[in-house]
Length: 157
Image 1 (spheres, one colour):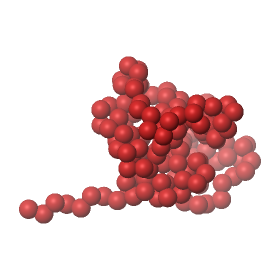
Image 2: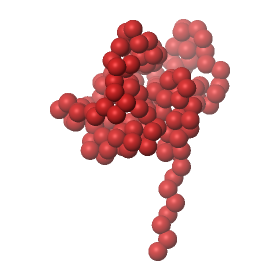
Image 3: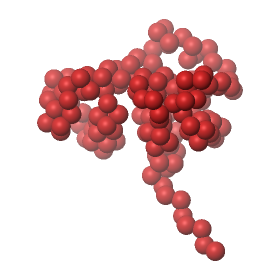
Image 4: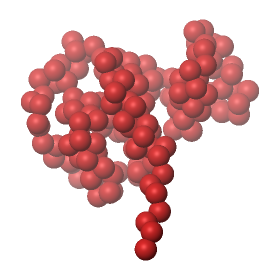
């Protein structure tokens, strides 16, 4: 499913190409790209649930989180996210790329991937996808893009 999300994000959303409005056309496009129907439906459902997170009536905890809430990870979340991933999540929150509500949206979407292990690269892409869908997060999205795409310069000795 994550491969489909990446395909959609890179080929339609991130490239600013026109996204198909018709659900069936998008499904057909993904089938032609080599993805199978069950995974396509799971990916499209994942994206719909991401959009639903914007509705505070359905997810009221997003509006009730204190600005500097501390996240205590469950045992299953610790198994899914390495120390490096949890540290990165804390880092992007501390530097203001995400806030506590966005962090919870990221965690919700990571858990919905139904993967036993999330790599740091996968985490970065999920953060980027969430930021893309949060209104008013253009600056944070640009900062996250820099974190993903800017390779660190080599250290000269």
